[in-house]
Image (cartoon, rainbow, N blue to C red; front, side):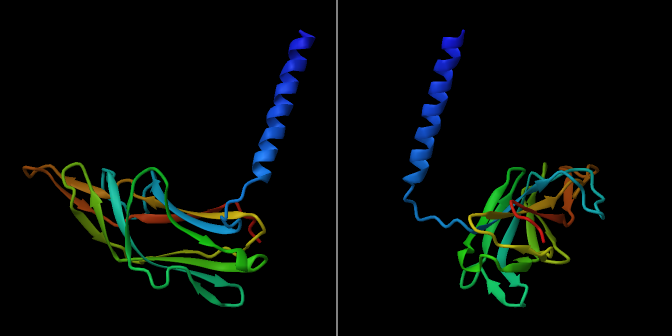
Length: 192
């Protein structure tokens, strides 16, 4: 029994040493201070939801991302890029990854993500539903600092529960999409 435990400890230590050697030899050029912005569906309803059904997907068009530093300097992270569509489903989808290594120890006071007002959706009976956002800019306004070797991930959860109303008195049934809400949550960073 004791011999078996010693063998297991030796294998564990050997695995630990190999893991450390591999991580020390990492020659990748990826940055270590970065911002990730991801979107997914949250199975919660916006305050004004009046429907009875959830969409299968929603399509948003990203038009801009701006970071505001505590000194009010605005950094456009989506400058000179064309608007890009993202089809949102329940699984989280990365929509931006940006290098923030130049801003270590700086405080970010706001992240603003701008979308086109018009969004598309897909329901049970129709794959071509549309609606408009009343406010096409999602804002995260809790200050935080960029830290050395930290990834900051902003999760945008789209509240889409009960945003589709279905009229079953028609043949085929017709659906109407109402605007979803958004919840923003920052992960992997200490708020100040």
